[in-house]
Image (cartoon, rainbow, N blue to C red; front, side):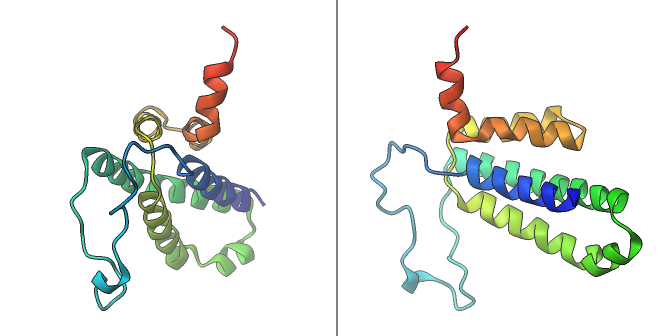
Length: 149
C-alpha cells in the first residue's frame, strides 16, 4: 500500500510543483511545431536557458532517488509475491525515465527549481525528501506569503 502512496506522492509532487506559473515571456516559441519533430517523435533539442538547465539537472537527480525510495518502501512493505508482480528490476527504470521526462517537460519557476535543488542536496531520508519537495507546490509559495509571522 505504501508503495502506491509513495508513487502517487511523487507523481503528485511533480504535477503540483510543475503546475502553471506566471511567465515573463510572451509564450510564443515555447513549444516546437509538430513538423519540426524528429521521425521518432522526439522534438529536436532547443537552446536552453540557465533555469531550464538547472531544472533538467534537478529532475535527473531526483528521478533515481524517488524511484529508490519507492523500491525500498515496496521491499519493506510488500510480501514476496507482490514484489514479483511489480517486477521492480524492469519497471523501476521505466518509472525513473518517466518521472524525469515529465519533470523536465513542465515549466517551473526559479523558486520551484531551487526547492528541488535544495531538497536533493539536504535531505537524505525518503520521507524528509518528499516532505521537502512539497515546498515546490505553487500554492505553497502563496501560503508562505500570506502566513502570519
